[in-house]
Image 1: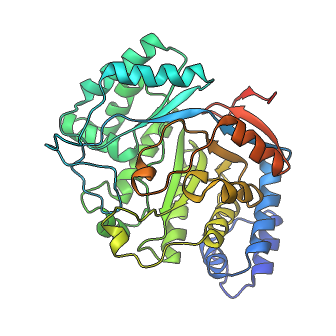
Image 2 (image 1 turned 180 degrees about the vertical axis):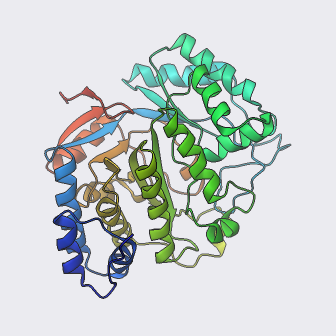
Length: 367
């Protein structure tokens, strides 16, 4: 792989990217270190306009269903989980509650749910097969965007099954696509600090590799602004891009900043990224991921105003209206919005709002 000399100026790097040259790691690091947000954002917006309809911003109506908060992994950045045996605050949702949440989502025009939870030692693969098949039996067109790579890894180990077999069984039961949760930073030095019990970088990537080989679509994420270096942010993106080159399946990339409240890690991290830093990282991701179609703004962690501004910094999608969200809100961030809010924000940014499904197919463009 050719390496772009770090001594190139930001202007030179952006000109080369706009001319079609792939942004390599050294150049990406130069952009990470640069204060020139305006130039980086303008280039990202130009690339976004080439890859997506320049007049539209998409969004999805769905909800998070966090089916359990019981977890043995003890991530020090997580305020959501409870240890096994916590009878006061630990939970696993019964079917009637999950069904009710789905019906509420469908009633307001929602098309799917993001189902994620803790690594609960009481739930085997048969539990997941049963809940997915039960959902599909009742709501056959409802999309299940469920189970991050660490959850898949945990389920496969408990069942003593290969990752590929675990995925195929869950897919046959009704699992449609995989979210990119649990990626954090795909550098093991960082992961050992954040969550030493959790899926390692290669394991996370292997789950996605196997999912892509089986024809499953997935998303990719990055949670940053804690103990990683700028170079490690670039390494994280490189590993995602390399996997996408090998076997494509990532349809979108979403980055967000570490939310420190009520977390063990928050007591150790003195400074978290500013909105300036968030916009720059998102813009760089659009320039870097020449092989991932969509970049999503993270209004849930940044707030709707920054989420709106981010639409001019490489994002073509505002993400989910998210009728329910529990993980980020546990860390003290509780932004809320409706479909009407989304449409107003998108129009005020100068775009036409379009509701999509998980595969980015149009659901409603008459909003």
